[in-house]
Length: 75
Image 1 (cartoon, rainbow, N blue to C red):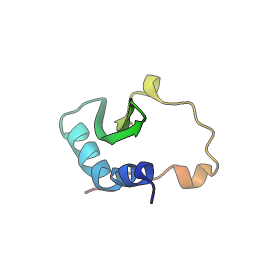
Image 2 (image 1 turned 90 degrees about the vertical axis):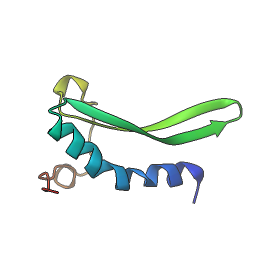
Image 3 (image 1 turned 90 degrees about the horizontal axis):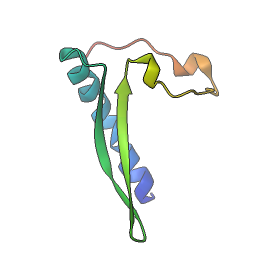
Image 4 (image 1 turned 135 degrees about the vertical axis):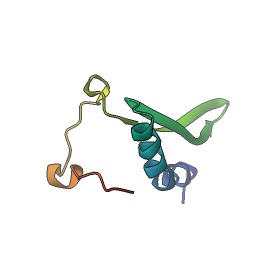
């Protein structure tokens, strides 16, 4: 597995605590650094961000709209 995929895989373990903290603190968003990729001397920080502020939504054309919208599970 590539380093990028290894770092991105950490999102699975971070997503629920990130959302839980956001909701508990009544924050509009929350984020965490998953790690850093090195491209020569350039550092690329991989981040996971959750937001409920529509002004911060990224315009996206989902390949599968039905698969991209899910109810929030209670955890």
